[in-house]
Length: 351
Ligand SMILES: [Zn+2]
Image (tube, rainbow, N blue to C red; front, side, top):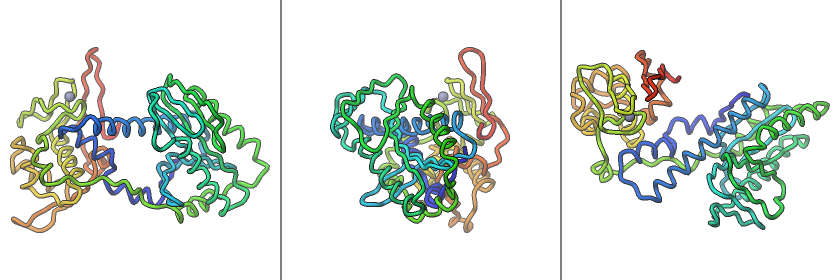
């Protein structure tokens, strides 16, 4: 499987996603139950999409192309969670990762017996019809299919009325469904192959940038925010932080190189304040006394692009969490996670 990033996707990778923002914000700010619920839904959604991509990698074919989270605006905005292009077919998957009973009856979807405002079946159909229209313009021979993938394990699903145009795939059937795609491709090999590059370029003509961008926090929120370095693993602020030691240690067993912990925290600030340059004054305030002026200056000078001098100095804000730009920093010391069972995991760079 080859993952392709379109122009719009690459463009949005320069900015923090809603999830990047929420992961940091929810650790540092008191949030309402509703905000917490919405955040958990986003995390579950991403995990669900990762699962489907993992299944495609394991049970699909090497030449298949997957595009993640492509946005269109055609009679209303829609997001194709996953677009899969084989030699002969184009598929769009709407992925849902609900850990509750799901029912569908005559256009009404309920999760945990509560009516869902935007029916996933309707979303999946809309995405399918939109993709079909664009693909047919490009070439009348392309066969387009759509599916709603309900990816949660052991989920109770009750489809009480027929669903038009698309299929509804449960986790238990996902492997079989992907193997079926390979079989469909094999059977259709006497037909004309899709010009994949041409199709992607054609899709890009209809693509829009993800309209759900992360916001930057306000000055008022900044005052209320929990400051300082937190554990990269469990989020605790109760860390063993000693300026003479190379590692920041947490009771959960996670040991992070001190320089990386400082860099990660600068990146967390960068995501929250994506509308601002990085200044030493603001960052020192964010570290809440845990880092000296000299240490912070050294790290900023080493890893960030410096602009101006003296009191006008600022550094370029890369706006992204460390996990997305770790390669930029050339870190050498590993992160070590000591587990309860005496075993431990070592993380070097992205591994
Ligand atoms: Zn921890």
